[in-house]
Length: 109
Image 1 (cartoon, one colour):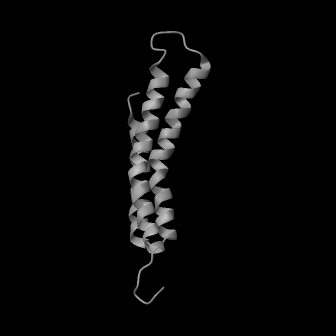
Image 2 (cartoon, helix red, strand yellow):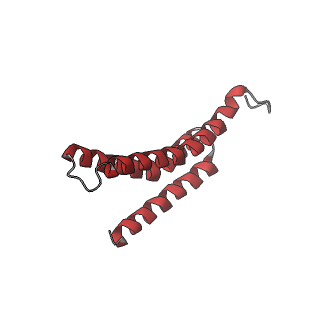
Image 3 (cartoon, one colour):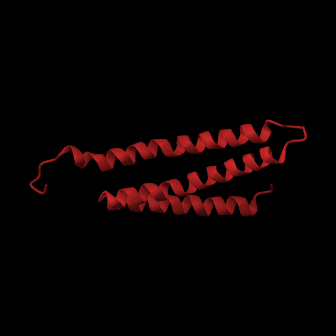
C-alpha cells in the first residue's frame, strides 16, 4: 500500500525489532548465568567431564548469542525495509565482536 495509509502489517517490522532488542540481552544474561551455575556447581570438587563440557558449551553459546544477536536483528531489519536500523545493528555486532576478540586476546585468564 503506497497510498500513504498504514496497515497492521506495517508495524510488524518495528515491533519485531523492538522485541528482539529486548530479548537479546536478557537471553545473553540468562545463558551466562546458567553457564556460571553449571560451572561452579562442583566448586572444589572433582567434577564429571560432562559437567565441565556443559559449562564450556553454555559459555560458548552465550558468546555466540551476545556477539551475533545484533547481526541477526540487522538481517531482520534489512528484510523489513529498515536500512538505517540494519546498519546500526550490523555496526554494533562488529564492535561487540572486535571488543570480544580484544578482551580474550589480552585477558589475563
